[in-house]
Length: 184
Ligand code: FES
Ligand code: FES
Image (tube, rainbow, N blue to C red; front, side, top):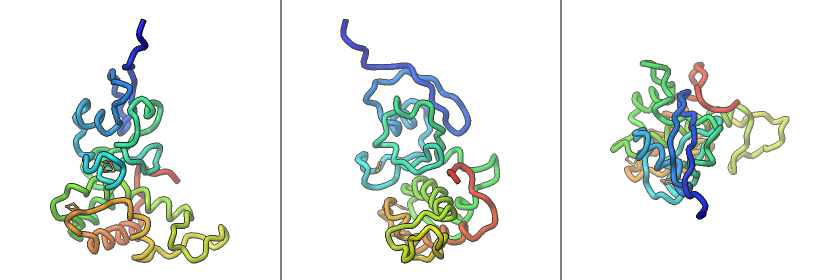
């Protein structure tokens, strides 16, 4: 008997469980968009280059076009649809709106998911490639524009809304509200 090329899986997305049968080659991005109608996550390059498909897996950023859906079983998946608290926008979403951190909006879900995790990564003391003092005892570096640009560099914007995106991430990071969905 030929080995099966599909499996039934249960995905935990935005706190809800979804059971579906997928071909083993199905990416998480295609499962979200084509099978579960969670079309907030965007497909740009489909090869890990643009960040449009960024989601959070167990609170950490991941490009869903490079994740197999079957490998995401058992993980806590947060998509742009799960970032807000009901009707209340996440501080990052609010900052993008207030500061026009977008033009066409295609890259925006990925930018926002990335920014949610960036703020948590920074608060947890993770250094970036532009951090001067990477000693653990140095603590988190100031979240300068250069730090934000470096940490968000995996998310491309064809509209070039980068100036406003950096401002939005800085404002959200400075807000006292705790972002939801990202790992501590
Ligand atoms: S669509 Fe996944 S990185 Fe571009
Ligand atoms: S807002 Fe259009 S691609 Fe970023």
